[in-house]
Each structure stands twice: as C-alpha cells, then as structure tokens.
Image (cartoon, rainbow, N blue to C red):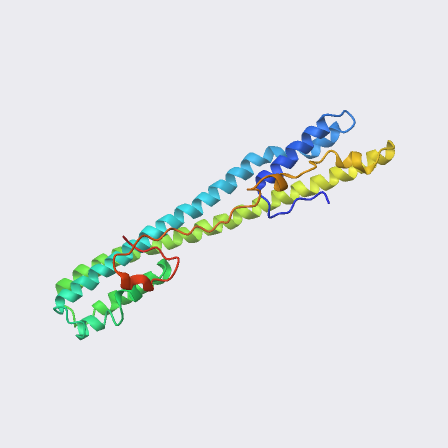
Length: 249
C-alpha cells in the first residue's frame, strides 16, 4: 500500500518523500521517524544527476550516429557518381553492377552499424582489377575514413547504452530504498496509532492523499529512445530507406 510504482519518475518519489519527511517532522511524536527519510532525500541530487548524465550520453551518441550515418551515405553517393562517370552512364557495365546491383536507395537505406558493413563491402570490391587506380585510391580513402569514424561512433553508442543501464540500476536501487523506508515508517506509525488509541487514518495522513503521479502529467519515466527526424530526400526513388533511419541532406 505504501509503495510507489517503479515505473514512475524519480521526481515523483522525491515529491512524496518531501511530504512524508515534513509531516513527520511536524510532530514531536513522529519526529524521530524522519531520520529514515532524510538520508534518502539527501541522495536525490546525486541520483537525479546520474539520471540526467546517462540520458544525455545516450542522446549525444545518437546524434553523432546520425551524422556519421549521413556522412557514410554521402560517401557512397560520391562513389556512385564517380562510377557512373567511369561507365559513361551505362548502368549495365560490370564496373557499375559489381558495386551497385540495385538502386542506390537500397544501398544506403541501412542504420549505421549495417551501413558500415555495406561500405566495407564496397571497399573490398573496389580492389578488383575492374577499376582504375586513381578511382580506387580516391574512393577507398574516402570510404575508409568514414568507416573508421562510423566504427568509433558505434562504440560510443555502446558505451553510452551500458552507462545508461548502470545508471538505471542505481536509480532503481534508490527507488527500492525509498519504498522500503516508506513501508517501515508506515509500520511504525500504525504501531504508534494502536498504542495511543488512534485509528489507521492517522497513520495514513502522513502520506500524500493524492500522489504526485495522479496529479502530474509527467510522472512516468520518459522513454530512453531517441529517434532523429528524417530530412527531406531529393530523390523520390530513395523512399525505400527503412523507416526511422535518417536520410542525408
């Protein structure tokens, strides 16, 4: 009865704790019980900052992944144009079909991790004797630079996600401690109520009658996922990009 759902935000827990601590301190009879609540409240700034920092890390990594993905797409487009020039716009020649067996939109439709694999495959194919040295050298250098950067960003995303999981575990521990303290206080209040001839309503009065979750529209924990908005694509045929993957401008 005196627990708060873990899905609710840390701010919801904080609001309820602030009320409970103040109510306990307001009476000499219950003042000592506030000692169970105050240390948990004092931890709140650290917990809140941990939450914000790990969320920020995930969002920042997502933003860098968007840019890296768009840059790889642009490099592949550059290769596409260069090979078209090489074959004189004849898309049936082996030099073109080896690299681009389907529409360019199918080639660059992937999310960053998969798009890196596509770029690596293109670099491997450029090593074939089909292609002149100058084109191979220029395009391989550009693609390898984007691949290296993309892999670094993928690693950043991985580390940010791990940090977020660790942060969420710390937050959950704090919430569990909050609920345990609330239950202990409630039990002590019921004992005092029975001892002094008071009813159960007296003990319940130390807790908010309407929880912050019921009175606030943002009481639930916000989702961690961040979906970057897709920009408009100039080539209609490139609508084959999978939903959710940002398109380069």
